[in-house]
Image 1 (spheres, one colour):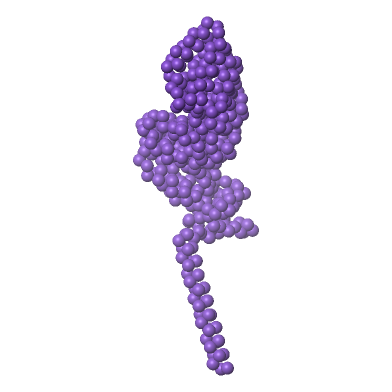
Image 2 (image 1 turned 135 degrees about the vertical axis):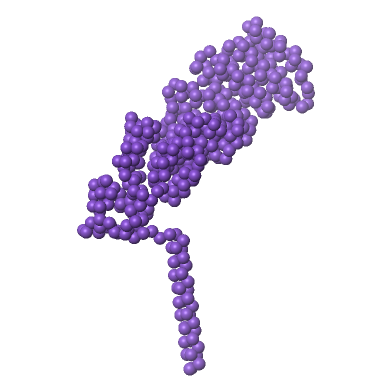
Length: 439
């Protein structure tokens, strides 16, 4: 700083504000602009900031919205303008947004501020907040696509001056708007920007709120894609939140959803492992009905569909997962029946080597054609190994080889092959030596 204009500003700014209040607005602004040039040239950071803030305050008090927008742009574009001064001015103007008399004037001010902050790292936080506010206005007007497009302009994850909580909050807003727009692919991409380790420190109330919001959005995405195993994981993560864990009603809701979605998930090693871990959870003793339901799919016994409906249908239909009033609920109920059939076929594969399709259909309580379709699906996905003699109507279960046994057999075969190669090489060398000796 070459010259300190502090004493001059202390006198000049109140004088100009008084002139503006007496109706000489542009005379006051002209004097301040002249003084601003001097302080800017002298690199007096503090005084330049005071003058810029004073200019926008005078425009605000005079309710001259057009002049306010013009001077915001003018001051930000002046040659060698000081960054801190622009930051102070933008921060001051951000407080005026809620004070605008009409929505049109508010949007105009927001757009002006977004224009002058574009590409400037030192005001990236203010730009993000203004963009969020504009997106809210568009959403309130019913323009979901416009609100989503505005929010997606922000690359929040690259902002170094923004707090982690605010970053997470804005990314969640982007996810929410994408889901509202039915853009599920983009929602998956944006969701990867949030590291779930951030939610481990959930003692803070704000972090808990963001965690619950994140998993609500992820569950909405998973429900649309029918990712039942993901839904189970999300509900278990919600269960670990203190706000849910300490509330019996919320705890039971999250735990019951985890059980039901786990039952609906296709059988695979990960699903089987998660089933055993969930059964070992002591919290499941609080809802014994769901624990017994989950145990049915672990026990090596056939499940009779009519018996399951008689015991559990009333309770399950009362949940939002299997609600008969929604198309998704009815579809999940059909999926549950398919899981029961698949479980029964897996159990048959353990106890039978050969069985007729007729007997199999009788045990499954299904028509023969549907039984054959279910069997083919399980064979195709690799859950069981079986061959069907369709002419004789007989199914032969060939059993599945354990991965460890398969690797042992492969290693033994490879060892045998290498022994044969070594023996052959030895014989070739022996014949070559004999040929040389005879010659």
